[in-house]
Image 1 (tube, helix red, strand yellow):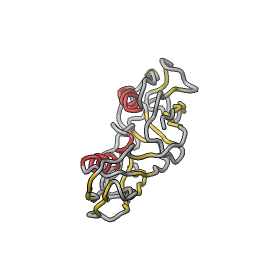
Image 2 (cartoon, rainbow, N blue to C red; image 1 turned 180 degrees about the vertical axis):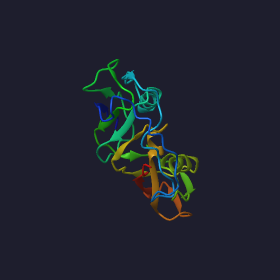
Image 3 (cartoon, rainbow, N blue to C red; image 1 turned 45 degrees about the horizontal axis):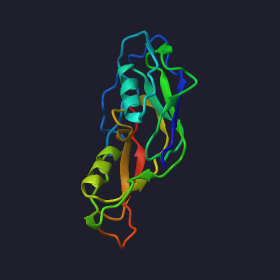
Image 4 (tube, rainbow, N blue to C red; image 1 turned 90 degrees about the vertical axis):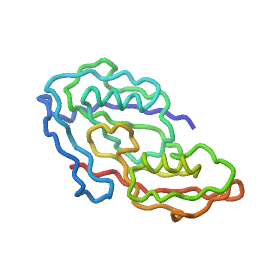
Length: 195
């Protein structure tokens, strides 16, 4: 299920810099709180990072270079394999605050396998998807979800940090028996609002 991600650079920020630094407000529509739309950064140019092997490294490179992130379509990719850049080339100079769009091919987003035994479904509503996935793995509960598009925002440390769980199936406390049941925890997520 390895898929790839193409990163498309869109120069959406003004070349004069965008020091519109905004704080983290809890007044958003989700219990996870809002994410900053922009952040203060030096005026000037930066270079597009090399894509590397995984999206985690790519996100760290975007953050270091003051580039913002947008995911223009709903996605369900479990892993991003060999992300590539386009049409901007690695090393190309662009204004700080520019937006990088992640575009990828569909594949199931969820845990790759199951661990035999009985596992209790944790309560994940109100957590970021990153926190929910960590809890699911700790409890050895298989999970699957689909993530909506993201508007342009400050690049999060982890792509799953940009999403908030608003509902889940089955209910917290449900015991899943593996093998024997094909029950999967399905958190419903929304993009965290920007402030």
